[in-house]
Length: 70
Image 1 (cartoon, rainbow, N blue to C red):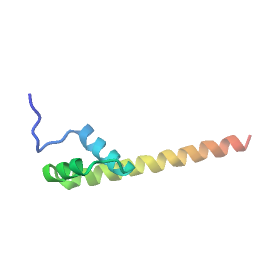
Image 2: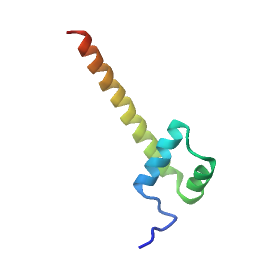
Image 3: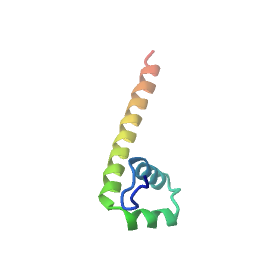
């Protein structure tokens, strides 16, 4: 069963968002994403990835500070 080109999977959207956040997404891929998908998918995924990143950094800082308190 072939995937509809108008529907990108969750993993493809996540891959595009992560590549864009790290600054390694190719121009071809960016144009492909925004010409074949709705932008709200990338906006929501970007916000979710950003929130997860901030929470992970906060947890890492708390852990590092707890090591210094020993």
